[in-house]
Image (cartoon, rainbow, N blue to C red):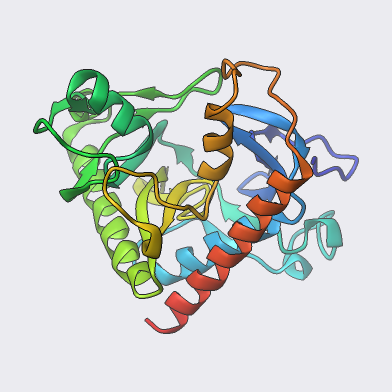
Length: 289
């Protein structure tokens, strides 16, 4: 649940523990799981290792766009982390970057919070959409729906215009274009394995004056992946991601504020099995590119 080397992490996120090493950071993906910005008491054994492996695969696949990765081999980490098995397979050494405090969300299909917003207002991310769209309907082209990151409380959905005013037109255009391009390539690759990439979020930082990809990329924690064989308009397709947990939570009376309800062993097992199956599909997808 917590990485502990008798060194207090410089920052403890919902899932990752961050160690500031001066010019670099060591990111350790724990087995904690969160939903609706709340961290649960239970963990998903091995989850941090799965997320790290998936992220690393995608970062390396998209090496044409700069990212923060420096080293993934624990035996090459600086002291006192070098060779420590508790950090192996779940930690990466990365460049330090100034985080851009926005989530660059790309949606290919009308689902989740976007579908709720559409049903309520007829809009998605403050943009009007045609009447009569169904749950899980594919957009004509993927859409960019940014959110402002908040360290406390829930992240805040904003319009493209708001983000553009706050970060500047040049940076906004670069982040939007990159996010849409990465999503589209990943979507097309995963379709070959019978998996639909419904939506995802990218995070960026500034390093040497240029934006680079940071945090995680295209994991089942940051993305919504569907089984194409169960895809049907007007329904929620079977997923390979944290949506399994969100769907269960939506069926309870929980108000999405701490403390969260306890997670059953069967739900934890289902989550882990789906994460592992998705990792297998991603490995096949990227090995056959």
